[in-house]
Image (tube, rainbow, N blue to C red):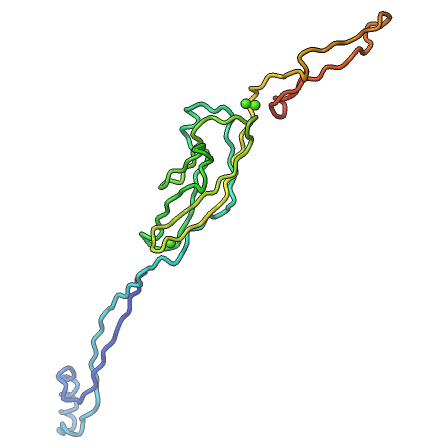
Length: 206
Ligand SMILES: [Ca+2]
Ligand SMILES: [Ca+2]
Ligand SMILES: [Ca+2]
């Protein structure tokens, strides 16, 4: 931060000062008595002083609007996975370089997720199977470059959006049903149950 001050230096002395010579001449013609007009006058100078307040690293990074959430498609292609699932955006109120932030993840969950240290972009490293794990919780860390380094941490919940990639399965491989010989058409003779591991409309069986 800079601020500008104007400093005034003042010097009081007698009327013999050359700076006021024209005024003195005028009075001399009126009275003819130089000594009777001796009085206190002053001269001054100004200078501009620029004061620079040097910043120290006294503000930690901050994650506005935390905690965060994002969604990623199940079985996403490598092309889809080349785009970030989320972009972290921490802020720091200090001046450069103390506002520069490096991002990391507290736990990459076995390398499943990563974050670009300088851009804050979060990536999934491989396609995700919603039926194995439908959501993940990550901890984003922002660290500034001061000494000591100050940090912030925020949660990022990743939800895996379902894709219809599971076929229905019968609960049992073989059903034995006994039908009375006098059964009429339409009578209930037994029940078979199938399940589908997908979610929502993807799991409806007809
Ligand atoms: Ca800082
Ligand atoms: Ca699946
Ligand atoms: Ca699925």
